[in-house]
Length: 95
Length: 500
Image (cartoon, rainbow over all chains, first blue to last red):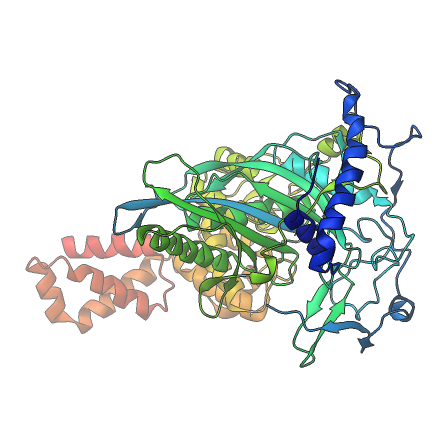
């Protein structure tokens, strides 16, 4: 599978990564190589085989509905680049 | 009967599907142990999981799973014993993980059905496509600073059920009826409080139009986050009209997300969402598939309360109510319980599912009093089902006083008002206010004589054949007895006097 320049540009935008136009061709080649490598897996016939979600035979553990966490606004906000009055603050995003 | 919009080129139909986000009633969040309470100090109910800190792992809350299954059963839906959580990827300031944990290909609940009650007493089945569990995002506040948005993550990670209908609705009224019924069922089940103002129930409407009689599905637009049933209806009406105008002027509708501006009553495009539709869902590697047992589902099923449709059918069969009255009574669990307590005479247990046959009281009369004077009093003052204007017990006793002839239906209206104002039982009110009806023939005849003696000209007119005036005499005698004359006796005695 090969990706074209515009697809690479769209992927970069979705990931919020700034990619200069002159790098798009190069990246399209690299990403296409990765996809081609992974595509080899499709040669294996997996008809009737359920997707493997874990190497351990486990089911999802559940938790009781109890409040055991929270009340730590200072810790939650400690690494924030910007904050005020107990809130995170970011450049204005509004419709 | 079909709802049509008249255009320049002919009539158009609307096709509506609704997505409802219902906040699950639980103490802790879907994947963390932080509290879910509304209105707490900013960021005080946030665990490191909810804040998307590196290395933190989600652990699912069993009660949230139960609530989703309970809701699925209430919607007569298929429960999937295996379901899978997926990541829905997008960037937004109030989504710290950079993705929402949701369910995509394998939701916990599949196809179901909801019966909506229409104003003419008929019902219509609306298909449920699916119900899945997902995390709520945080909250952005844009009006606290000129250049910054403030982010509160208290809501981040709270469990939501996204309930998706099939595109089976064809008018704003049907959409309103769907939301009303869904909210009623969620409240009966105790899985969501249904409060649209506080945002614990939010609605997105998918709207498209097509020429009358056509079966095609044209491009739809999604109107996001409308926060009242009335606004949903207005938004649908506006959006349908917009589509028709675009088609009739030769244009095309573009699939997009729109916002409803309730102040202007119109929808507008949300530009920021234009590129957001590529969510790149994939199974969340932090979570194994959710596997539940049939026993788990059966246990929840056994504990389901009697739901509105069943209760309505029972009220019609057991109490002889018509479809409309029964529908009004069962709309809220509390109103249904109140009615049953009045109708049954208080002796029986009003608990769900243990309904005893109707007690001694006339159920139709009980329904009329509850829906009439009682609802009016409820709406007029600061009352709730926990604090009603008149208790079910006292309203029942008042009906007993009508039935045993102590008061007439007419006097009962006064007694009721005094009961509300003075918070006393009906017998006390009747005694204190002297509201017992007059059933003494002599006393009523005396009052009739007095009125006739005072109005000889009108007596002559009646005798000359002007029967309509008899009603005037009844009114005068009623007035003279302060409304206490037994109406049936009064009518009979007056008729008799004029025949003499």
